[in-house]
Amino acid sequence: MTDYRRAYSRPGESGACSGRKREPMIDVQNRMDHRNIDIDKVGVKDIRYPITVMDKNSGVQHTVASINMYVDLPREFKGTHMSRFIEILNEFHGNLDIREFSSILEAMQERLNAESANLEISFPYFMKKLSPITEAAGLMEYGCRICGSLDSKNGYDLVLEVNVPITTVCPCSKEISDYGAHNQRGLVRLAVRFRRLVWIEDLVRLIESCASCEVYSVLKRPDEKFVTETAYENPKFVEDVVRDIAAELRDDPNILWFMVDVENFESIHNHSAYACIERNSCKAVNSEQ
Image 1 (cartoon, rainbow, N blue to C red):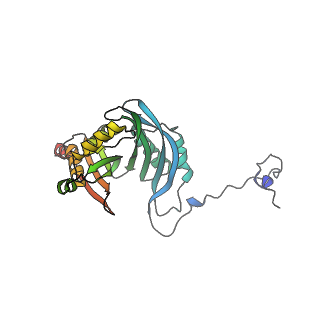
Image 2: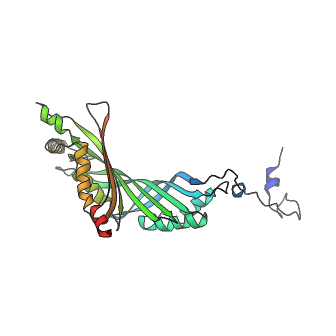
Image 3: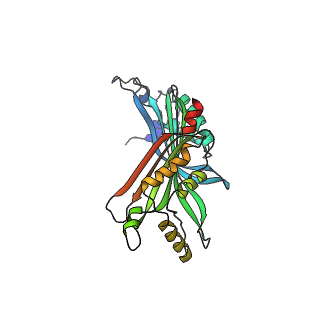
């Protein structure tokens, strides 16, 4: 049986061969690759990591993120140094916010000798929300994502994405029905590029204001009555929701680009309804002309 303690002991320690020089470990990933194919993205995925996010009301919010980190790999190299991604991440001690993205990407680019670097952080963001009538407090969870990239040719890019649940009532159903109208939950996904800091809370509020009604975590009977009647008096197709959101964003000089899509999980159909708009901001385009 092999004595692994002896095999891996250091010179001078018990079991090591006295005076024998250690052989350097072979670094396979630095070997040449002869297939002549560049790799666009190589790295690590789904790192679970505690982070600190800026909170508009409380200053900061602590949450847990799923992190992806990638760089490009030139055709001549067999592999990249996976451990360096984790080392770079650990240097920030979980205090990650939008303002540090460029620094992390620069470190990835430098330490891994890469032309391009990509960082994706997905995390749940919680907001305290009061029910509309009884003001019962509850926490709402919103799925968020921040994607940053740094390229020697195209420079720095950052996209913030929020996912917000909503309620919609079908205008057609209301119009043709003698009794009520069908409603459903929907999910709005909004991604933006911006000039100055954009608060997650502001994007959430914008989206919720364009729905038939907001979604709450806690509702008493008076609240349910309010939500049901509010939605009924404000029917919207998915087309209405994306257009209303786009109309708000297209004239915002702080928004450079946006993509918004809406999926309604239909209550009377065996399919979802979907709509999407992607645009550059009108004012952003005009200001650059």
